[in-house]
Length: 190
Image (cartoon, rainbow, N blue to C red; front, top):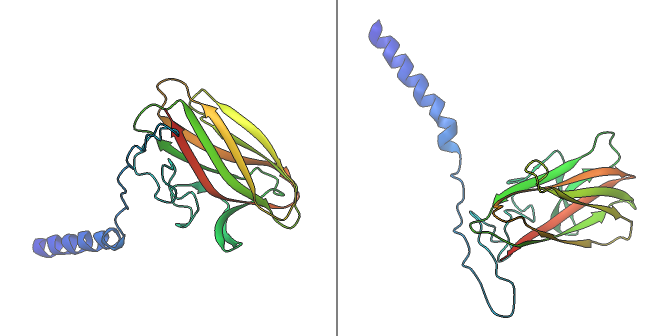
């Protein structure tokens, strides 16, 4: 009887590993080479950086892998034949999207850019912020007006000495319809 108990425990243990074995191992991308030149910025590598854009400190900035490496209640949709994350600005509670990353070395400036588009002629406000929970908090308020096309947002932010952990977040404030976001790129300049 005791042997049957051990056999049963062994079978249960094996079956509990099946979901873990079925998962794909996480993709690892080596940090990009430092591409310092005399004519442009020095790009700082990041642990597991994206291959979407050379030097991009973010992973999955174009949502090709869904919301992997991002947090949001928004949904991934196709807009103009590319993936975008949609946030509904008409909801009572603010909607958000965000991500975090670490640099390998210190940077002086973060050059942040992304594209946003209002859907259905919506006018909407959102706030983009970096490192609210870590101190050194910076934010910028943006109003998106209907125009039918993608608007590129650029934001350069100075980085306090020694800071290597970053959290970037966008929070909707108010609006008359959905906003779509894509093509997030963050470059670190030494």
